[in-house]
Length: 110
Length: 112
Image (cartoon, rainbow over all chains, first blue to last red; front, top):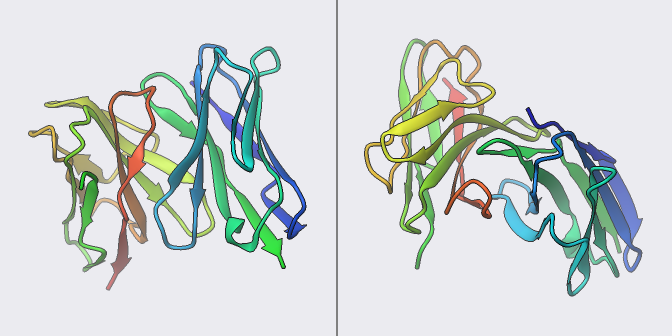
């Protein structure tokens, strides 16, 4: 089945810096890759997703890149703000279900 | 306003007791999912259902049971066989497997 690895587990940046979170997946048949943001005690919320027919997608300060050959995808956050502090999860669709990475705790210091 | 409703928000279980967590959605989604999240951990799949009257075990199904008698509802029962039930339980739904999942606000279960 699908296996998703996510790095780093924690990431500390200064406000205004960029943050990059990386994930790798194992199933070459996977073709849908969402990213979720979860604030403490709250529900995960979808922030961006990408399908395997594109290599990059942007939404304001957030972008996701996908390298199908290497089976890895990354989340890029530019001009980070304190409200970006949260846990971020990547995921990949295996057979009938999403498989989540273990999460990255992002801390943005003012 | 469409969405997913989980209840209760907090639940306490006594020794040897079964408890049921409710999950209802009005998004007309076919697929529904139950996840368990332990402190500082990721989401682990308990059970999922792609269609009414059908469901599949996830990665950690032991000690749990589900039903899917209606499209809108996917209740999770935590049985007495689950020896370590304390966790945050999240329900999600999606139009189908390769579509975005929408999550409920979760139920926090503790042992008395």
